Length: 576
Ligand SMILES: [Zn+2]
Image (cartoon, rainbow, N blue to C red; front, side):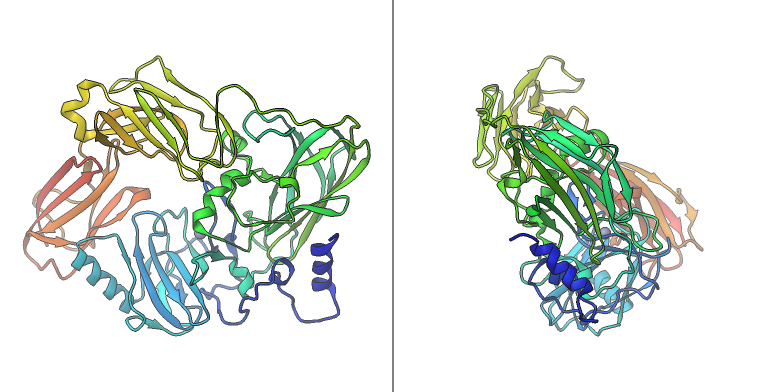
């Protein structure tokens, strides 16, 4: 099956047909509608601050981030006829978001919105008041909020976990909820710049699972604009079983930032041995990025090396043509040609070619290490002692590990247990693990306030049960029991006792919690619940004056609770 992908691509891009051929014909047989969707914004030319599948911390970017000129308030349009199927308000995440179901089988998602269009905003506010909650996740029926293609449904913003004004836009399969590259739907982003390659790495795997101790070698590259080679050397001498990895990004026309590439293919003597392509993925698999990349190097250096070998427990379905998990044995004494072919979503391509002189020593796979307790990626793994219970569920490990565990000698201030060192942070986990730590008897009076913290100080949550505190940390690390007895802090920004608030649009506060985190906030004016809005990234909490406050004297009461039910109350009289 030599040349399969490259030949089709060449035909598609340079063949006799004059019709623009889209990238999905290169990478899959899925036919996506190319003319159903208009642009979600009217900003021309459209530009992306982030592309689909771009590498982010603990996830692949699930949509396209449209640039909005560092400003908020651009009209956001329904890309096709349909109805609003989900109304979402989050303190973080997508902030204000809308989901639209379309008759063609796809759902579009619009995130980080500044505000909704008036008819949507009225619905959202009514729901917030009836549920007495700022955060909302509602699924309206099809006839409540129908939309027409080109209708303004919202205005672009910077709400939720957004790091600057932009529109986060997604296309999902309505049935599976898998998110799909919007550029496969005729959402056309000007880009004739081929992907950029900045490094090649060689990993000496030799039959062992990849981990933080796998020896790796870095190779500088030279060249550019679609063609790279190794700097100064043409041929690498290798022996045994190796894996390769690269650092690659994409640039778009007229945009300063870097985006992600669409596909990476590795060929050994013209035979594909590894392909990854970011056509679509499920949210449940997105954390698999920590298996896709060299995670230890990412933690240490914040460099995302995309491995061209696949851990056996990696659940991502973005791979094809993977021979021997992408691990290559060099033991035949011959010269081999290696080629990387990197493609962006517009079909621009970059190659890296180099030679490998294989050693003629027969590669013999080493038996697995005997040190430590062997945890298999295929199974549920447990370690139970009188003081700790550790359960790593099936599906959490990406590969086998020699599990290490010990009790650390030093006790931090405020600890109600020993410090348990549970393996190390360099091993990524897909679904986290379950941890139960035996509590000191002195915890008993405070057991309702107990939680597990990492030695870095981050709360893992937790509940007390039969002498243990239980939590589900997302990563391995060192953990102990602490308590949160301190209520959140409420800092008024623009209000004080007896103050006149006429001519002011909002009452604002900053709120924060020392350990377990904010669970809820409720504000009452003259005893009646009113809508306070919250933004996690700025710790801002505010009430916008509305029909609930008439001219005259009023009393505001605010109650903010943390995850351990410590409640701070604030009361103030004001006039308007
Ligand atoms: Zn985004």
